[in-house]
Each structure stands twice: as structure tokens, then as C-alpha cells.
Image 1 (cartoon, helix red, strand yellow):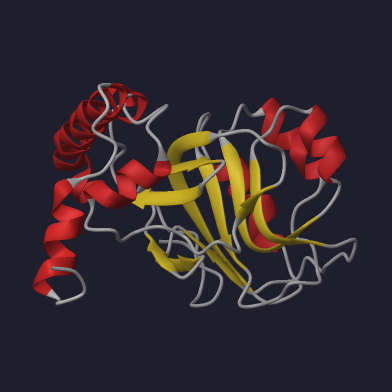
Image 2: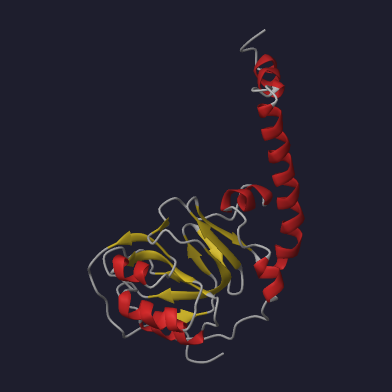
Length: 224
């Protein structure tokens, strides 16, 4: 641990293997959320701004409103492929990430950024091929004074993100896979995908409606 309370830069937890993280690439965020009991997904205010998916390990950042000192430092702390995940403590008008920082992130080969708050220069970030999600887009800037902390538990999009968690983002939103259950989530997702494929095959054979829907309605006395 470095720095006083409020300015801490904590060490990242032991990294999950690249092979494990790679198995989550291409997995749909809704399938991951369903596999985890329909939990661990960010609220719909966290939206893709560049149209690019992401998957990687979280480097978490807690910022004072209207300050991005520790976001700059997180770009240095993060490893290639990592996702910088930022809590701005509710600020939505002071962008903590923009094109210049995007150049740094792209040169570092980071996996993307997620901001519960504002980013700006979206066209420039898109041209860099960098995945970026945020709650808002706003031209306002911010300070670089702190306080702020790195690799601490945060809330982003109304869900908990711990340093080292696997973060998956796509057109549907962002799902967070807690690092301590990542191995156990994969077989649950595989089983879910198999069930969905089987249902699609049923529909293609002409079984358009699931019988359990009417069964549920009969139990509730809606139909006979």
C-alpha cells in the first residue's frame, strides 16, 4: 500500500490467467448476468460510446468529483489488456477521460475504460480503436489535484467492482464477473447457451410458444 488514506495506490491482486480471461471474450454480457443469478451487471446508464466491446481485468479508480489525477496514474499502473473502471462520485459534467488520455491508453494497449461519469472527445477515442463506456459525454474538463485511490473496491453503474474482476462490455451493457467465482461461471454460461440453442431449434421446427407460459397462467387463474 502506498500513500495516505484518500491517496492510496494499492497493489493489484494476483492476476487471473490470460487463458481464463480469454475464455470470456465473445461471451454476451446478458448471458453472464443470467448465469450469475441475474446480478453483477451495470445499470443501463453505462453505455458504449465507441461501439467496441471489451473484456479484461479491472483496475479500479475512485475519484473526487471533477478530478482525474488518479485516472492518469491508473493508465500507468494498468497492464496491457486491463480495463480502467472509474467512479467519479456522481459527477456527470466534468470529463475524466478524453482523446489525449486515449492516446496513452491505446499506446499502452489497454483493453478499454469504463467511467461512471463523463468522458469527452468520443470521435477521437473511437478513431484510436479504444473501447469506452460511460454514463455521460460532456465537454467539461476537470482538475488533477486528488484525492483519489486506485485498486480499491468501487461502485460503477450500481454494481460492485473489485480490482482484478473480469469486466465484459458489449452493445447490451457491462457485466462484472467477480474474480473468485470466474472459473465456476463458465460452465454455467455454457449450459445456458446450450439451452438457448435448443430453444432456437425448437422454434425453427415450429414450436413457437413455450408450454410453461400457459401453465404459469393457469396456476394464476388467468386462463383455463
